[in-house]
Length: 312
Image 1: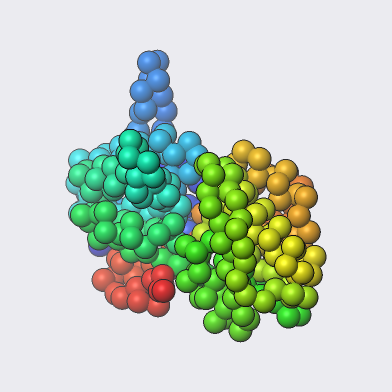
Image 2: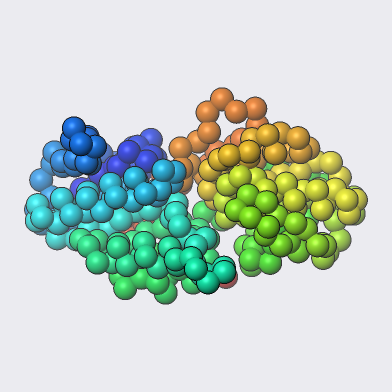
């Protein structure tokens, strides 16, 4: 089937990078607002009988970008698309995968139900917050990983005697994946989350003394988790030369101020969300355009994605 590639407003530069890597045009999608602020979507290319891919991370503002994706998918389906795949490099709401106190929604499940109930046949995501998210979906999910790309980029910044630091127990398997590539030991920070932007460290397991930490996580949001992990490693005697590696660099709220005070030589992230502009941080951005293009090419040809899928 012919491929049709469209972008929402969340990250058009990444969609263009995907199109360039595919050697295909980025088809035009017109997004606008009616006078009462309702969203307007119009696809300017025929999708009849086509294999349609919609590139749209649900990055901030997540609700707006999510609804854009839903309407784009509906427009493609109603125009006769044979198959519609949502390419969601950053999947928002993934951290709301359970109730913390008893009177909250499981937002990740709500979003999964919305995507599964509409015109979308398949979801492609990159380094989701927890693999359990896949179980929330009734449609097939292709969980790609940017870890091999990020690990190679981190090599260029790794000092002698590096140590991979998992900033919490949830990141241990992720740190181990980096450790296999970088051939370095792993240390684990034990933390308790106080609020959405505040955490408290209770200890660190592993030897970081006189080693250069590489702190790894799936995302950098407010920077609270990274800050706490860095402070714990410094208190345990690491060298004041740190690298942070994360798949998704949101840098929201107090993130920039928190990270600026740390002895960071580099922050390595992907372009799953638009790269930060004009911030005083040593950010190194790795493009996942070729990764997504490879996945789209294989899906279109009904080929395996085995070596692109995130593994424990």
